[in-house]
Amino acid sequence: MPPTVGALRQWRPQLCVNFHGGTRSAWMSALSGAEHRAGFGHFRHRWAYNLRIPRAQEILAEERPVHTAEHLASAMFWLGATVCEIPRAKLVVRNVEKRSIAVIHPVAATPEKTWRAEGFIAVAERLKKLGLEPIFIGADTDDLSPFHDFFVIKGAPLDKVKTVLAGASFFVGNDSGPAHMAAAFGLPVVVIFGNSNPAIWGPWRTASEVLTAPGGIGQIEIAQVVSALERLRVHA
Image (cartoon, rainbow, N blue to C red; front, side):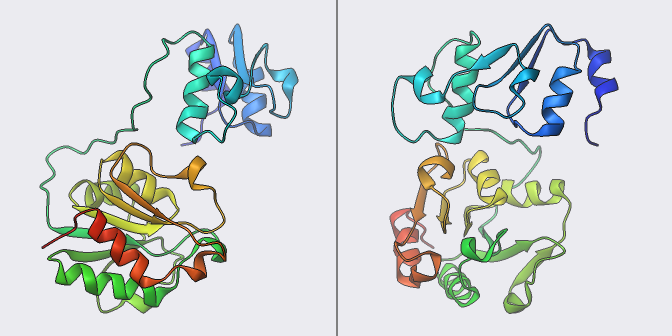
């Protein structure tokens, strides 16, 4: 259920931190009733915030692309949290038994972020030879028909996706939400990137291989993905 201004005001927060920066979240920050309203200084609608957080590079004193995890953590450091090593995100599902399965997410939001289906099929066949059962996942609106020879989970609720990932041994897929969920469970992951910057959006603090190509995602070869599996020690 999306948050409402009424529910937020009833909570009577002392501090409201807006990590999003959009119009709706700015209005919710302004109307939250919080004495302290924080948002990054580069956000639109700066009027909504009486605490304007500097650039992450300024806070971290490092002029380089910063990962999203560092970007968000830097805001909390600036607001007074103890500066420390930034851990990986964690998702928890109780009473899940680990199985020899590899979750494959072969779709993404745009064609520029989507590796070709035949590549994922070849990788799935390789994973089977390595002793892992491939499971393809996707949303109701995704075309998973090229993967009909494999076990497919389509349109499952988020809790089901979490349970499948929590019980898996490995993940491979495009740069997308399930890749970050897999990383939050601490799975070894191979993530195939298109036009996003892996320095900013790559898996955070889990065993991982990130694959890119100068000519875009279509130039990434099957052999590169297979080599990444081997470097992560995916064996039968």
